Image 1 (cartoon, rainbow, N blue to C red):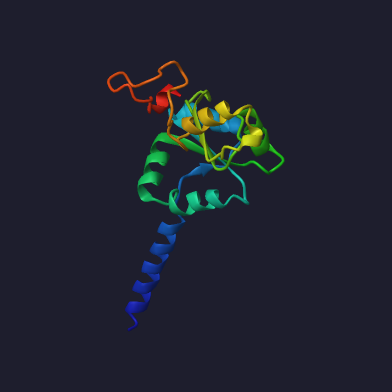
Image 2: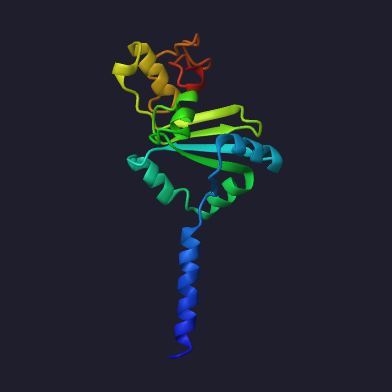
Amino acid sequence: MKRLLPIAVVLLSCIITCQAQGIAFVSTSWDETVQNAVKNDKQIFLYAQTKSCRYCRQMEKEVFTDPGVIDFYNKHFVSYKIDVDDDGPGEALSKQYGVMGFPTYLYFDKSGQKLHQSSALPIQRKRCQSPEFTFTAAARIGLIMPKRPCIMGAPSAPQTGKPCMNPAHI
């Protein structure tokens, strides 16, 4: 019985340590993050979130704790996390890069040039310029697939003559 207690303590501490690991978000400034990316020859992953964002918490709990995700991001990226509501650098970066929905994921090359941005931004008609804009924006982020002819000059699929369903044409 006395031998089981130390083994149980070791196992419990290993479990706690493993659960505490995640993507290694740096706590430096944005400029230092870019310098660190250059020095380590890695790209940059910027995760924009707010404390009140339910989907941000879900990502942090379910995705950012996945061992495969952790290994991939820690190997290939310098990861930087911002709180958009912090009245400081997070808010400034969110304005600079047009963050409007949460969570938002931005990817930069090692010199800090933006390569890609994706978000959970819901399409709301009141923010849109027109119904055509709503359709185009929703199709671009994968919320809908076009059910009518492509609006970018490809009225039908070449072989079938049916309305274009290729989101790349949106």
